[in-house]
Length: 102
Image (cartoon, rainbow, N blue to C red; front, side, top):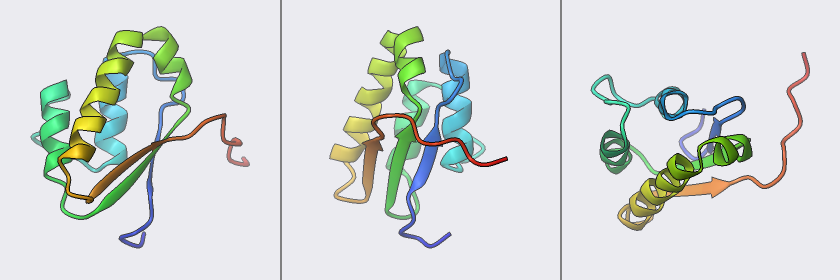
């Protein structure tokens, strides 16, 4: 992966905060100390080693099943972007991307 390639955070099938945190940890290659809570996510996003663009896909199901957690996730991402001095961008993909061919 080139440093400027976006990271895809695919939330397909995510319906709870624990699964959301697991997906974030995997997609963003968060450090071992990542505590899988909102504060730890905010801290991790503030400590990214390089500029990063994150594209969040298939988020609609999570937004429907866990609306408060989804709202908090958006707030954490927005705060991280605002404090990143241009080193972080988080984009929400609208619509459903095609499934990967089997």
